[in-house]
Amino acid sequence: MTDSQPTNTLRSPLPLPCGVTVPNRLCKAAMTEGLATPQGLPSPELNRLYGLWSDGGAGILLSGNIQVDKDHLERPGNVVVDSTPTNEMQAALASWAEAGTRNGNHFWAQISHAGRQTQTNVNKQPKAPSSVAVGLPGGQFGKPVALTEPEIVDLVERFGICAKACQEAGFTGVQIHSAHGYLLSQFLSPRTNLRDDRYGGSLENRARMLVEVVAAIRTAVGPNFPIAVKLNSADFQKGGFECADSIQVAKWLEAASVDMIEISGGTYEQPQLLGVEGMEEVVEQEVQESTVAREAYFVDFALAMQQEVSIPLMVTGGFRLKSAMEEALQNGADVIGIGRPMCVMTDAPDQLMSGLEELPRYESQLTFFPP
Image (cartoon, rainbow, N blue to C red; front, side, top):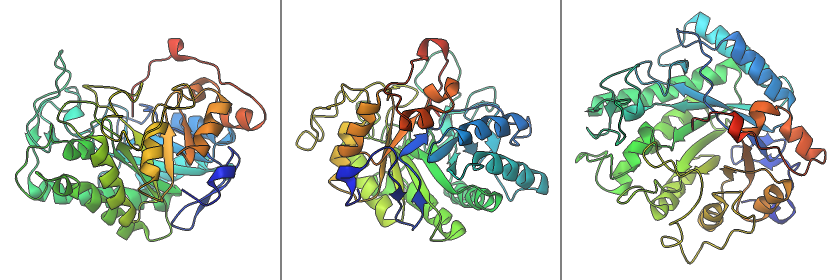
């Protein structure tokens, strides 16, 4: 958190540890688009969409999943950068980045690997930390195969290659997806990581791949390029990744030169993006009752994490009232993420900063898949 936190408003600039400044405290949260070409290239439709969002006033736009392995998509229609990009891919990335930054805002690439949460219409036998299937009926996800150590090393390198390609294309930062039960989140959880090598067992070992991914990206992009991480506060599953674990991992990420952590939670098996129930027994002494009527689902945890790390924290989930957003900025959050409202009101950030007191609720009209 910054020294000026008590006076932060939605319009306040945010300096990041890497030396870059974000123009305001509003971020278009990552939402899966499914608009890439069949070859995984950014499309004209993505360019039009992100151009509209760039016009909308957010200080940061986060892309939906950009995958580092074409065989492990979160869904068909993901952008894929899994090797040194071709000229065609680099040109398509550059067009997307140009559209997404045309009003001087930041546009960060969310880099991911779906791991065991790869749908069977993409890959019937995906790779994961261990051979632990997603516990959902319907056959949407296949039984995974445990990654070998050389395969892990290769994936770490791919994250770095993807980040460098995005930087060269004109993106202004990257976010590593380590939440919602995707691959890096799977490594963190003792429910899905049953390994007995240096990537399993202790929390330090389970966090090793994530820390190595951060290091690979920092080496690729240099010291002055923003790197963020999306991190679960908890999996909300018995025996899973817990709040105390998340705080410890955040400390390691800060030491590894991460510039921002977005706090989230849940997995496909337990999609608790709807509350923070159960958190208090883990960090009871640090978590206070929310003062924003639970509109900001993870603000309580941000307040706890704020006591342990000094890097900026982003919270996303359910924000509609401007007063709640401003309150969150005084109580643990540095950046407010807005998702579903911007699917319809693409200029929601400008409207909030111009006096709008409450965003409309469009949930009944939209189908949402957590990115």
